[in-house]
Image (cartoon, chains in turn brown, purple):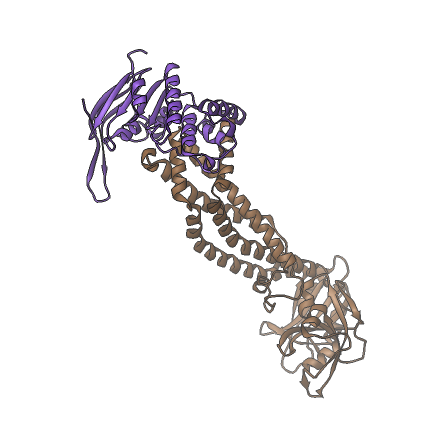
Length: 397
Length: 225
């Protein structure tokens, strides 16, 4: 046992004996692992936030559909929903998109009755929009920063409808426990949202709260409603219902899809990196060849040299993986994920103004470590084996 | 000294191919034996095959033809592991004192003992004794880059002796040394031989030749005279 430990220790010191090779291998490892670890951390962070958002939302989300696609629903459909046994509250909601500012920043407009902002948001400046007062907006703090707007700022008419053009006013800024909301969300009253999209008495859906234990029964009752738009001359708008469980199972799919694409790109990048790592692993080959020959000449066996090379590779990969994780943390926490957030959040800038969510999970780091160890060990062991199986007299020439 | 040969070479030949495809006959049809406890001086002009002979005796190379026996076993055709085991019983002093750069002297001297399970503490002690014996004891913590050529050669001898070998093989150990250092090295070989070890030295040095109990003179890869 002591013998193996002693040989392993020589593998550890070999890292410092070949500084050029060690530094080059470390650099390659970090260059390959860092984007992967950082990207995986952002994907995990977004999934976590999506989970929190769903958990803090309504019991059921009811929307309308035509041709199997989302369709607006009359606000009056709320009455039919309220009549279902087990329903405690029905909140109409409008969700749509507009482009604001000279840079045409995509903004998600959420129209809700006054006082119905999600619990995870809090007004940090100004106040919430007032009932009955049109064109009052509450912006995410980061969005306001990007648009250079403040409480009291007046937005020139950014929409035109049958009633003409209207000037809007920023009355408040909010922050959220889910920072990505701050980046592109704008809250306003239902009436203001109706005016922005010029869809009178229509909403995009309802948030439905149920009595405990009634969620599934209510969901079934909603789905049995033949039509959410009783007086629509164009035919029925059929209900579509999503419970929290449905959202949990479906929402992350898009993130997982992006994560999968990212993994695929990473695999391709790693494929390019394989020869690079093999080359750096064999850097200083002539010196290593002489060293292996000298050790063989003084009685070391080939398997002992391979063990030494294996430990050297292990140490290099542990160092590389640790440095990559540390740098990934710095990249995401201190530099707010510049460059990587946009991969997972369509519309997010290269340098996002909101707090990029991330969670450094052990599995991607471990996976990266295993892959890099395989590569570095292959490069090291092959060159060591070649040197060790050459007659020492020839290798020492 | 008894008559049992430690080494025996039977019709040994070692050919190399030069870069231009020519066959170089470094050794050709050489036979000799080295008795246990003997001191053999291998002499001859440069390029006559002295280094090649030592490499074959030291299991550092394989013959193209013939057999090299150590303790009665053919080491030329032995497996890599068997040849490594043979090398553990030998101490080899190279013409160029190959060292591992960056390692302190004591580690360089006792690196061969690592796979033999000798603890670091014990290796430090062994290195201190050997370095003192070869006259570089005060610089045990230094690295090889800080040493002169003569000092490095002496550290190479200390390394060869680290495993308490049965046989010491040395390839022109005094060729790059000044007279005083050369004499010290010769004295060291005398002591090693006096301690009952077998010594085989390839040399041009008359001082070493006078110590030898037997001489083997090579010319163009063959025994001469």
